[in-house]
Amino acid sequence: MYPRLPAELPDVEAIEFVRFCRQRRRVAWPELYDEMAAVASRGLFRGYGLAELGERGIGFSLSDTPRLAALVASVIAAEGPVVRVGAARRGRAVIGGAVVGEASTAEDGSTRETVERAAAVG
Image (cartoon, rainbow, N blue to C red):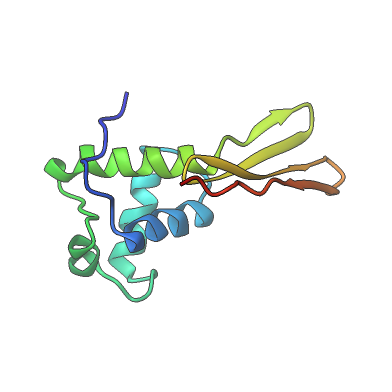
């Protein structure tokens, strides 16, 4: 089980960095760590290297690993699972805890999408 994120919200660019790396290579932790380190070392995300990412809460040291693993887990959870049902894939978009869309892709490549508008609470 991954540790929880600290009470403060992660930097938006840190979340975008994790999404960028996940789009490049659709793997989970710990394989995603390798992709993130490679992207950081080459400055492939907005030209940010290790120092710039560190300023945004992305650290690659052993002591930073639990926090980074928690961030990755939260980003993956927010994306929703990609589940194989027969030859179809399904995904869910979640923003702020509300499901805002779903899509499924059949083996032939056809796509079916549904979008639900989340009512603003408050």
